[in-house]
Amino acid sequence: MVEFCGLKLSNPVVNASGTFDAIAARRIYGEALLQDFPFSAFVSKTITPAPRVGNEPQRIWETPAGMINSIGLPNKGLDGFLAEDLPQLAELPVPLIVSVMGTSREEFSRLVEEVAGREEVAAVELNVSCPNVHSGLIVGEQPGETMALLEALRPLTGKPLIVKLTPNVADPAAVAVGAAEGGADAVSLINTLKASAIDPVTGQPGIAAGHGGLSGPAVRPVAIAQVRAVAAAVELPIVGMGGVCSGADAAEMLAAGAQLVAVGTENFRDPRAGSRIAAELSECLLVAV
Amino acid sequence: MTAPFGRRLCEVAESRDSGGYRLFSLLDEEGPVPLPGQFYMLATEHHWEQDGGRPFLPRALSVADVPPGEGPTQLDFLIEGIGPGTDRLCELVPGERVWVNGPLGNSFSPPRELAPGAAGAILVGGGIGIAPLALLRRRFADRNIPTRVLLGFRDEVHSGGLDDLFACCEVGLASEDGHIGHRGYITDVFSAMLEGDDAAGAAVYACGPPPMLDAVAALCADRGVACELAMESPMACGYGACFGCAVPKPDGGYMRLCVDGPVIRGG
Image 1 (cartoon, each protein chain N blue to C red):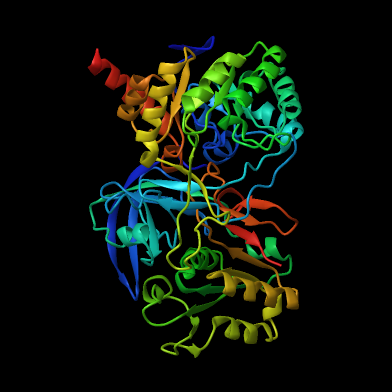
Image 2: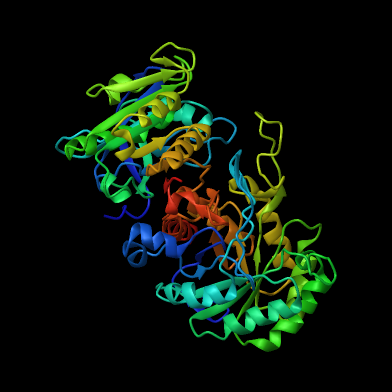
């Protein structure tokens, strides 16, 4: 049993936002998904105020020990999520963490109020990797913007607010300090690394958008360094992620300073990766004791 | 029947050349018998990330045939080596094991569901896209549905599977280099067939390169013939998690080919 921001979880392994669609998986695998749910908490795909169709294909590109994606946050929008998806996600046997993203404090405020106000939701993750429409700055790249956003959102809910940090900054620990000073309960990192690859056949980027985010085991050493830096800078609990594929990888993330470990890209290769990694991790920890 | 949750190891029973392609068979102890058009995500147990970290993701392959028999379900796959993942799968040897997730995706509809008055089926395949049509042909034969098969290839190197997957039926053939059948596109043969008396009353099923699928869909739309197309898109997971395999929907936006396809209604 693990305690995280007041949530009691059966183990430290959760999913990274946008890497597991529990509703689609239940349609495909049936009730076995619920009987053997692979994560101790479920983090939803990011919800935005209005529906989004996502980016033009091609959206993914395999790279050495990883992949680049530029999916574009397709989602039903807040109203569609609350009406159609939330009732289904509430049937999962684990606490639900909903990821949200807005382009202004007003949008974020509405998202947090509406989402955190639902009893099915245990915590909210703030995806701050998009520009603020007023300042033009990417919130999660600026300690001051991040602090100001959290100061605006903090009074709106007593539920845990988790800030998802981007790795595409010189000093992620400074942004984590901003999140902590603004009143965040936890931080999660790393999001994907900005990356591109050229299709050798066309000579053009393999991703239609020109670039995307790199994930998979290729990024794990970057994640470990950033989790260590953030853990040294703030007292907040950390959800560590980036290329975790095995229990040994998860143990490394915990040793770097994370309290929870999120599995992302490995879910694509193994739908039960979360359960496998949690089991392997408990073996690793037994050996360590 | 739903797919077993998670991935499982299946043993390779056989792997051999089939024309310019490779054909390999896996023995599946756990999964349900797949429907025609469904696919599996495959990665070898060993030496997957062997060469500079690639292949990394599993590869989506339509099941080509499920020969009848006792014991574990035999899954036959037809494959062309076009990159690190398919190249590795071409090297499979009997006795080694493959991670399998599936069967995934939807399947082809019976002719009468596609078109209430359909008297039979026309299958149109191009290149490696002939694979899912072999299992479809087998299932239609099981149900005595009159079926005509048209298969086209670029050239001799980029062809295969005929003797292994379509030996028992009459096949109309085309090749761009003229090494077999009509010299040209299989859609030329298909177009001529649609001009025939009874062809317009058939349901059409196609799988192949995008230009071929576009041509088949356009010919069917012109003549008011119902058709289904099995499509392909880059896919990381195969079960709706990655949102990578998006293809445009006719009414705007995108759908995930893995959960809303790979078979879509044409026209």
